[in-house]
Amino acid sequence: MVFSSPVFLFLFLPLCFICYAITNASKNVKANNICLLVFSIVFYAYGSLSFLPILLASIVVNYFLSKCTDKAEDKKTRKALLIISLIINIGLLFIYKYLNLFTGFFFGSEHATNIILPIGISFYTFQVLSYLVDVYRKDVKSCDNIFDFALFTMLFPQLIAGPIVRYSTIEKELKSRTTSIDSFSEGIKRFMVGFAKKIVFANALGRICDLAFNELGYYKMGTLLSIFVIICYSMQIYLDFWAYSDMAIGIGKIFGFTFLENFNNPFLSTSISEFWTRWHISLSSFFKDYVYIPLGGNKKGLLRTCINLTIVFALSGFWHGANFNFLFWGLYNALFLVIERIIKVKTKFRVPPTIGIIYVFIVWNIGMILFRLDSLNQVALYLNGLFSSPLYNYSTRELLNIIFTPTFAICFFVSVLYLTPLFDKIKYRLNHTKYGYIIVDTVIAFMFIYAVIEMLTSGFNPFLYFRF
Image: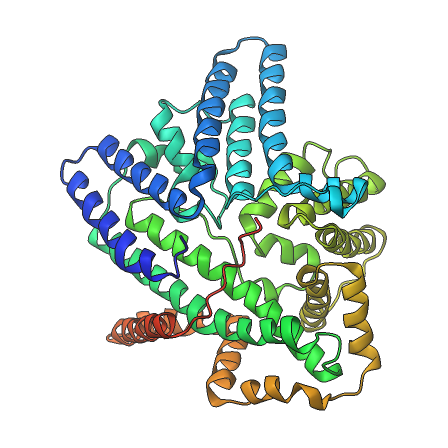
């Protein structure tokens, strides 16, 4: 079940609101938590029923391991329990996400396993890992009861597409939280904004990308269209993922949870290093706190720093998908991070902000070719078409007929504006005028209604994070 589906919007979410309102009337947070846990189980079971027992078993095992780790007095026992926890969780992730890839690579595609990837396994595995490490470090106490731990692990707003929520972020809210008209209203509006962002804009860009990559021959589009399509894909990924984070944060706020922001205007970055502090912040901070810093961070000299960055982004690339192209995409990012680090340490050179923003946009979009295609051979074909083809290929008229429609032109223009903080600034200024909030709320309501109509009338609604 995805947020941008009729069954979620018209059945699951209203029923969840009603049941939560009933339990909330008792002012009993345990009853609220049980209500959300039941709906979270239903949410996951709807899309991945066969994997629900594995998720529930993982919750039970990790809960008792964390309790044992918390109670252990000596460091050796704590460390042994942490290692067991890591082996179980990373092993489970490896089997379901990467075993197909490696058996195919080492023994040939005919011997590859055919294991189906459980939805959201990368997100909830990293979420549990952060909790287990924090308990080991004594940064947090282990969860009081298994029901709260289960809710932390599989709370449905962030279960399948993040953000990766740390236990310390919602620890107090699991035990005591309140909801108000203001927080409910703010959460609803945040969800509506994310919903419209996904359905209206990300999906419009996705139609172009799917047509180009799947039907027309991505390596025969000509230089100009090849550039345009990869920019569309880059914006689709951004708006789609950002929209799901918006919806997750909004739903969380409705039920009294505060999830941290996952994006912060990444395309205003002047370096790739800065970009990764603004893009998918929950993942970047996870790798920083649980991999980069334990490896030594930047405290052991320039060479070690560069090695650590390379390791982190190789792992980050593989986290995104069970395909060697993702590994190369991670190493591609690491290359620029290493170059930037060397320049920063060895010289006093500083890139002017405007040049830096252009540089980041170009580097990121080239990287998206690796992210979108499935093999280096396909990447080579795309680059050959990009640099060796004529500026325009007449066989792409079907695609151009869509691009030059007024509807797509408006969607593309608004999507470009989403790369800037313009809308946030307009909203801020309007909200500080006498009747500006009415304009803002009216626009949000109109876009949401339009998005609902679009969802019901269009058969195109991809879920980009199925492979995670």
